[in-house]
Image (tube, rainbow, N blue to C red; front, side, top):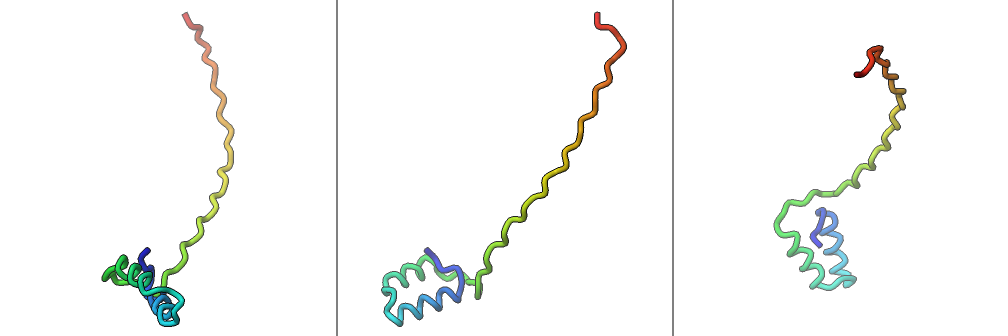
Length: 70
């Protein structure tokens, strides 16, 4: 899984130095990320707004024709 931000990459490097993750894990993530330019931080996605219910409208009555069908 590639890194999503530069801050995440730094955090993983810190965990590597502390010995909490292996070098293989860090290198795998680094390899998958490649040389792409990462944003400093990733903002969470905005929550979807709830849609307002449409007001129901009454349908118009059909006017009966005065002609007789043949």
